[in-house]
Length: 220
Image (cartoon, rainbow, N blue to C red; front, top):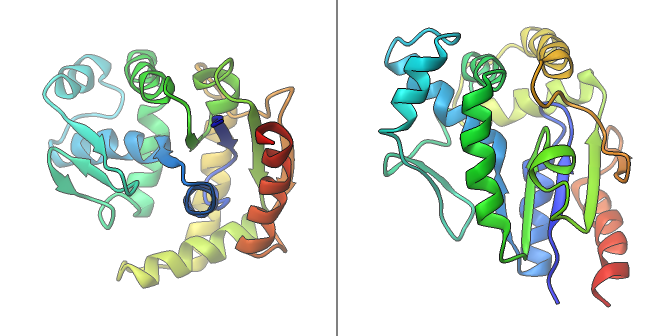
């Protein structure tokens, strides 16, 4: 028996890292919904489209292919773009385009279609509250302090060869938290039936073990 697992939480809380490790342990597939919004934002930036021009962005999406392969890697129009979509600029741009109703509707529909077969770990900002509201047996709200999240993103940038300033990242994270929590459509919030885990002082293994313990109650 396979179930769906929803992981929500603020930017840089480690959602994708934890989701990938869960998939390895469970033999599930990972869907990084945040990366899908980042792809839309990245392409809009590349095409000099204003991030509040919903009509042009939606038209751009009609000519855009976002695909996640069996390894959880994301391709934009057939190109691996992981190293390009994790910059601070794209992060803030993704927060901006995620406010657009038609953009969210299109991506949510894609995400729900992906999850119909079950056996997925999906992470983002509104998975437990919107995308998999009725399609996830386990819902996790993963959080961490802005300092801890900033340090993680800073290290990730350095590993990807991206120029990085820790203090700027922390300030951007705080600003994105504010934007994500106050947007009109699908604001960031904990689902009523979600279990909250603060990963500020936990290792990846400790967080994964805690979630596996919860999952085992449903699949045994």
